[in-house]
Amino acid sequence: MDLQVWIDKAYELILDFGPRIIGAILIYIIGGWIIKITLKSLKRFMEKASYEESLKKFLVNLLNWTLKIVLIIVILGIVGIETTSFAAILAAAGLAVGLALQGSLANFAGGVLIMIFKPFKIGDLIEAQGEMGVVKEIEIFTTKLTGLSNKEIIIPNGTLSNGNIVNYSVTGTRRVDLVFGVHYDSDIKKTKEVLMNVIKSHPMVIESPEPTVNVLELADSSVNFAVRPWCKTADYWTVYFDVIENTKIALDMAGIEIPYPHQVEIQKKG
Image (tube, rainbow, N blue to C red; front, side, top):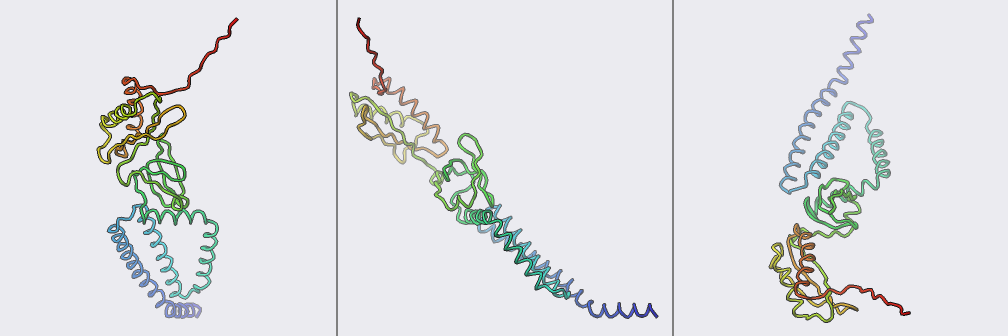
């Protein structure tokens, strides 16, 4: 008698929940297939649009988890579990996490903007937030630079995307700005000729744009010349230091004096 009652109850449960469970299984299979197709389509789209690799991975993972959560909620609803309160809990949890991670969300948004608009790419020499370096890695929350002294610089993407960015690698060339002062007794034309020969003889100085040498100012104790050679971005510091050294040597050979402070010693008599 008791066994028959259990059998009847089991039969009723099967009739009641059987179609729901079968429907849930079908929805899970079909939903999983749709999610895979959607993710593959997104990957193909981002590859054609040349999205950054880190952005592609993040967006794929974000969409994957979002679709899976939606699928789970749908399956729970089919089985008969109340999903209204479940969705409310998720919304409340999402709001709490959002408020707790405002800075991280700002950095995330900045990272997405950087990857979409591409103000710089890996390998570019940039100056931003008071730092200068070569872009080593662009992540979702931060950008890593290798500084000129080989130090690692990590800048949050939120502040980076909202500030000024100077990209020295976009055009591929860079101007070297140097100033040299000579004595007032020096011949201006001869000095300009010596300075121009120095920069034009350097193998890394390019011909176009054309290098220039001009009188910059008549200072208190010297006539200052603005020396402006151009070079490839990668050769900047080599040209910078070489021109300074070669200019000193060339001016000495030409007998052109570079003024410097003199200390006059006064001897007392008696």
